[in-house]
Length: 464
Ligand SMILES: Cc1cc2nc3c(=O)[nH]c(=O)nc-3n(C[C@H](O)[C@H](O)[C@H](O)COP(=O)(O)OP(=O)(O)OC[C@H]3O[C@@H](n4cnc5c(N)ncnc54)[C@H](O)[C@@H]3O)c2cc1C
Image: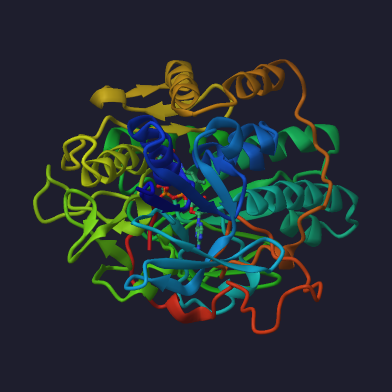
């Protein structure tokens, strides 16, 4: 009898952990295939440290073939209309533009999320998101370049504009980007001073009345205090009315001259899950507490792309966090194995274990198991948490942290990722857009979607 075929689409927190747990549970009694556009798992919570030049980009990646030896990796992206639930197949496009089709007996959808857009004039053209490695690398180079250009500028107006950085959305991503950014630019101008009286200025905006609106209030207060002490201009109750190449018009009527707009207003589920025609909850695929799609017992979904009932808060769905995605990966694996008669199934239930927000330097805000921490103790807990949570590459990450503590930050921009290759509106934030090299087969439609989901109101980790 042939072995059952399990296909996992997406190798982020949920998909990686599904594959890892399934390989252990099935002990080669099933063929496990992982379809992912890159050959690595990306530890997203450390992305702001890549943008700030604390960590080298490869540190926060974990090789899929290197750590999942009993799982077959297929490099590629499931096509937007490529999932056929009746035929039990997934069509995909590989990194060189070739198409392929994978069959399955069990399917796990773990495709995560992409940048959330809002219909604000000029934002799609002038802002960049912060959801993948290419965007973090672009951001790092761009910020360093702005400081270098500002230091050489004769005109004080242009110098000030280049050294003004606007971050929209004070969820954990925007808060960390602004906190780390201020430290990076302060370090850069110590080496190449700006015109007298000008200091790099970071603005952090959110429509909510406080930063980190979805996290514990005490933790948010700690983060707010650290940011303000550092000089970050925190503006709550404020949003962007219009973005232009020369600056940003705020909702209070002020025009801030700037060349940098970082869009961290949150994320929306990967549009792939819309395409399969099953019920959605604000863009997320609805599953039952066993992570199965109702009426399709062979299809499972988990992570940001799935609306998983929160059994601890009846009527609600679990948040879009790495903690949930990772643990849902465990449960999805177990329930896939259960559907093959290997073990018993179990519902997803998980209590909040607290949150950590790295604010750069030795500072952080954390509330592990509900205990509020700040200062260097929170910093140590936060870094310890990340090391424990990473499925690999821990020694290299720790080595970079050590080097950053004893050596000056390397303020060098390589300029390898250009602005046009990381558009805000993309369904593939993990890949930098390439100029069309003519190798794409006729009829191949790049995954960068039209602005179809721009107006969608979806759950997010930041403000809206
Ligand atoms: C900058 C940043 C910082 C964050 N910090 C924290 C934090 O501190 N704590 C926390 O709890 N959460 C944090 N999050 C949120 C957390 O990272 C997400 O909730 C988590 O990654 C969701 O896991 P996932 O597996 O659903 O999706 P992801 O981890 O995004 O993985 C999705 C995978 O699917 C792949 N994929 C997408 N489309 C396709 C396709 N068509 N075909 C094949 N593969 C596809 C992607 O390449 C990716 O590998 C952060 C997010 C960001 C962006």
